[in-house]
Amino acid sequence: MKNKSELFFEKQLKEHGANVVISTDDGSAGRKGSASELAKEILQQEEIDAVITCGPEMMMKALLDYCDNITFQASLERYMKCAMGICGQCCIGKGLRVCKDGPVFDGKTLKDFEDFGIYRRDSAGRKIQF
Image 1 (tube, rainbow, N blue to C red):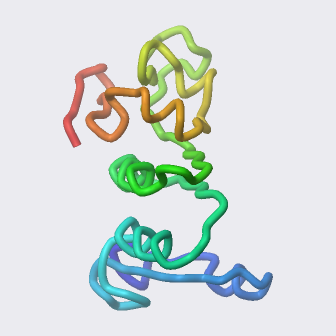
Image 2 (image 1 turned 30 degrees about the vertical axis):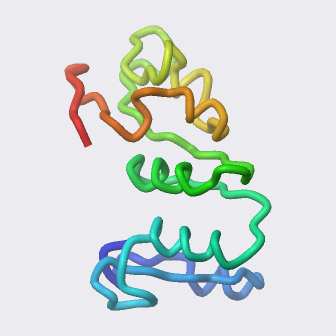
């Protein structure tokens, strides 16, 4: 989150017993800094069984790099035109389609994708570097 105003579900998560750890880019809530850096510290300090993530692809790529021997799943977001697997707009890796083969991919699969965390496609299909 960039700042405190973008936080959501904090109260509900705490009410259900979740251990909520917050970071914001500007430090207006929780720790100042990126979520991936905070996650890296937690992964180094605690025994974590699995990481399940969604959000910006650059953050998910950083998390994947920190999770060598930890079960990892990421819900990818790619631009989709048809959402039926025909157009290829949401392809990742060697022809997998986020709309049909995902959107959730495991860490082992993601590590084989040369384009994960490198670029996205715009509405015209052009590659846009992160």
